[in-house]
Image 1 (tube, rainbow, N blue to C red):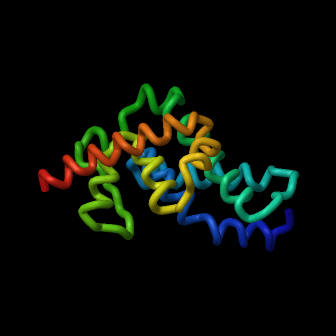
Image 2: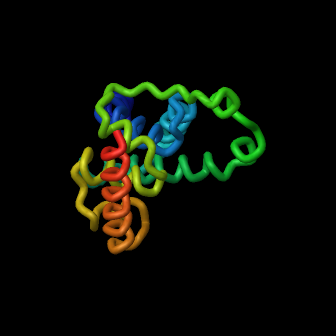
Length: 156
């Protein structure tokens, strides 16, 4: 992969990868680290992508794997972040609607399927392939997430 291809891919997918990382970590600094690791892995990739969709799916899968690695790391398990200490996590995104705020409060497993389904336009089958889970699990998580969102938005 040459420099121009790499820069094109980064520009094209930076927002998507960042949003996925933030939806997992709920922290912009941690999300930045995960995005950086995701694009470092892209640099070390030797094979070319079959098409643009393959490129996007690969990046999302790597990002999800990096998020999972982040949560299972020694550092994450044994060190409290300043956000956890202050109980006032900083979270800045372009969206500020009540719906997006409610989505951020969902459990990680629910928020990622909601994001991929509604914001990225993936089908349940495609989400299942990306996250390496069964399609029925994706549908269950979507139903659960919608129910949680409905309850949260009624309270507001």
